Length: 338
Image 1 (cartoon, rainbow, N blue to C red):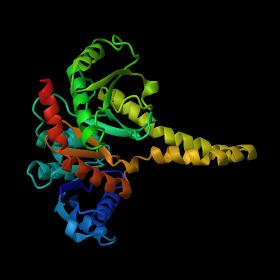
Image 2: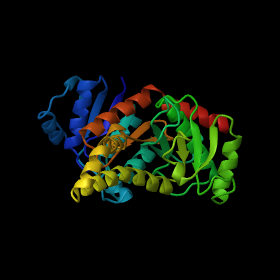
Image 3: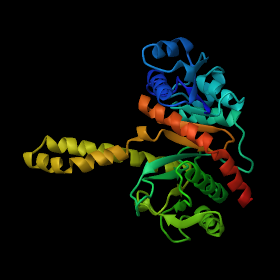
Image 4: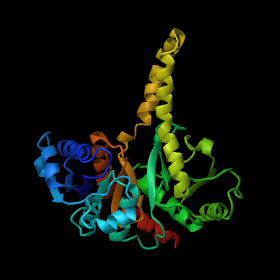
């Protein structure tokens, strides 16, 4: 079993929910975890819950980066921050992956400082799974979107590399034998979106190792046409947050409707099963987090609002990505297009 370093101090509900999530993982799996952070606080939380001490160790870190702190300045001022200590543990071989629900910018910067990029990779990418419609029986209910926050702007080669990285992750972790890749754009025509997207389209069309299905418009993101969708980080982050908000809107509308009129209450009762299914499918706590792809080591960014359940699943996904050799698969794919 791989060893997973977990930033116990990162996230809106840290360290309590983080530690409880690792405790749950220790009882449900044989994954070994190293909790990084304030040792006294971590130990106190562990003593309040059930856990398997054989699967958990603690690495003390005296400082933490707050969710609203400027990443570069915070890491410079706090040399013993938990996210930095966790990244060093992985870089030094004491763990095989890192999980954090903390400050996204600080997480990415800490990884960039201590992890080596896979040879040939120009920019790393955060890849997030999200729920979508399926077009045929057995199709995965989750698609992969990248980048969702590690970059702001990209050129055509960056987008091509994102496609390779996303395909590798989908093959290894989601077990999609030949992932269909789409390029997020404002139209389906090859010439849409400006020079960068047009050039990326041409490269992806010519790439034999990628099953490129063309441009994907916004109204097709939640459909089953593509298993992997690539885009710049700014756009991907906006799309991801929009998807996350859909379930909240649906449940809020339903809750408000039942308070207004008896007829609406009857209607909502009939739709309740469908509403529950939407909320269940869009529940980010089931999916663990977004892997940062492009480094020789793995990092999984859990949602800032992660509860114990979300952290438990993040640990499981990180361990699965290690066991399935995701970095090696990406490296092979990048070498093939150089």
